[in-house]
Length: 308
Image (tube, rainbow, N blue to C red; front, top):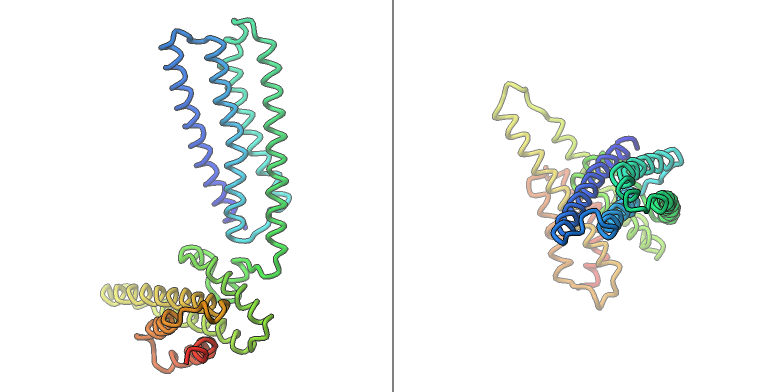
């Protein structure tokens, strides 16, 4: 959980920097245009600058909380109260700094124009408005995450890691989180439609066995002094990782086909998909390949029996 929070914080800092830079570019363009029009430091000029900062404050709440939402939905992880308060505090602090910057730069200019009181009132309302908007967006984010977590079919990356033995970092790097989540959901729906549970379990077991073999290959590290052997080992690990990923994606394709009405299934693609699965075992130990394929074959037969 802490690793995910750190990742989100990094993304938010990058986004905040981008938003501040965009505001700097906007205000520079405003200054150039108003100076060219002989309206430098006019109320029109100052109000346009103020509107740019207002846009920055509005974008901060929306964009930073959107990052929180996107990442947490991807990994199906709730926003706990401690994290929620920390996020609110962090964004409020950044907004306060920006508002103080506006006061420092422009309060005196508004006062010289005879609009000091109006500026002070306006800045108070702006601060209150964006604080309220931030809290409303946070409430909406919490509701969205809660609703998603209530989906009984959902499975988190941590649960995927426990089920298949693939660590969360690898799941993310190989873009397998969504694929395995969807396989889990689709197989769950098939189970509800009275498809033999042993067939569906075979898919999960086949993936688990493939992961175990990939880890066995990865653990066969040759002596560090044997450079050629280590290079060959790294290539073998990389190749098996790719083959494992191809098999999982192909199983996802078959699962999608099982859900379609028979008249909408593309049987050529179904057969090619099964061939592709078998091809991922070309360099596999024969006996171990047969064990896994025997677990997966009944799932393919759900479709293959209807083809012939």
